[in-house]
Amino acid sequence: MIEGGCHCGQIRYGFNGIAEYETNCHCTTCQKTSGAPYVAWFTVKKSSLLLLSGKPKPYQSSAHGVRMFCSNCGTLLFFQYTSHSDEIDITTCSLANPELMPPKDHTWVESKLPWVMISDDLPQHEKSPHD
Image (cartoon, rainbow, N blue to C red; front, side):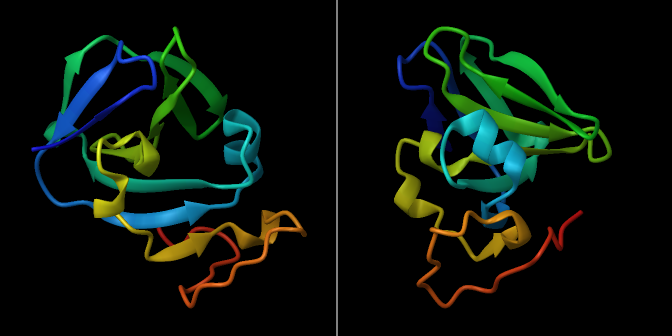
């Protein structure tokens, strides 16, 4: 089982199974809800996610999804698309070992901040190829 959680330790989770869609997302919603220029995410089957302690607070961040945070420290943990109820996105850096889940591409680069320089050779997508 791969495990992770929030900064304060109130929420801990684990998952078994295969991760997909490892990405650096540059969309404006990720920027605003994280306070960062982009967020690293990956996707797992919702049935493989186990909450080990605590309960994240949901926030309807757009018409197409809900983000889940720790209500104590504010760590962004999960994103659930309303159209993909069998999948859930997990923030890569909330993992205990985020180096185990490197990104495979950049998504929503049409919203990338002009001072962010993408210097790797990963594919770049104007929007999300996974929607």
